[in-house]
Length: 314
Ligand code: CP
Ligand code: NVA
Image (cartoon, rainbow, N blue to C red):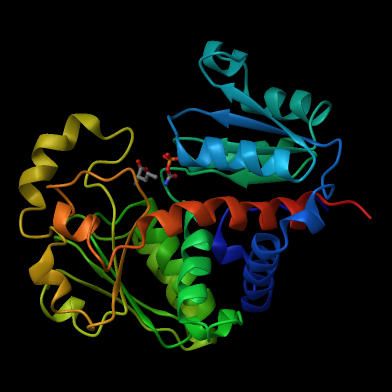
């Protein structure tokens, strides 16, 4: 059966740890993987814009000996109404894997159901699993003993996500649940994570001992955080709500006062792109606790591991 990477919730804790370890190995010994995907092609469908996802997948495929094709949905026939099912079947005759950035998560499920090659979620309105695997890699590197790497160090740490209960919040909840990391989502009422995602994440967390919480309390919620994470208040596709959201999220900016309530050695993370002065102050975003560019770099390494895991033959 063809395997896909649509959600971190589909990974067993052992598989998730194996992927992080592989990502770390690929990062430290890239030459050993130079021909891992030789002659293979990844089709990359984009219904939305991207800087990190597009560039890191394209560069990653090149570094693994393969090739990536940028397929903007404006340029391929999907933009003129060709069905996802037909697109999936046709692409499967040409390429060895598909990465897609979409609005509705069901588009990814349709690509996976009708195609015969692995499908990777490059962000949907529901989830952003490549980002949170890169985030887990970044935190595990940071918290591992210098000179070693152990995905197990995530267990029992506390990540606090402050902001919209969106695709990032959902994937961070799943990632925390799978790695045994406590996750608190601090969001205004009305912007809390999806209840179905919360139920799934809590069921997973019960197997790893992670604690998951949602609160509107920006004081108590942030206390004890080892990592404070945020994302934009208006995601791609929500541009027309931006003004209302700016009002609704007042008081939820990650600024120095908020960071002061976290642990003294806490790090600040953001999937980027960031809006300084909205969800995060410039002082925090560009300050000494910020690890946003290590995080962005790790998209490349984490995704190379996902590509190798799904596509390497033999
Ligand atoms: N974080 C992230 O996915 O960035 P892009 O939208 O630039 O791909
Ligand atoms: N929540 C954001 C993430 C961007 C990487 C969005 O969906 O636009």
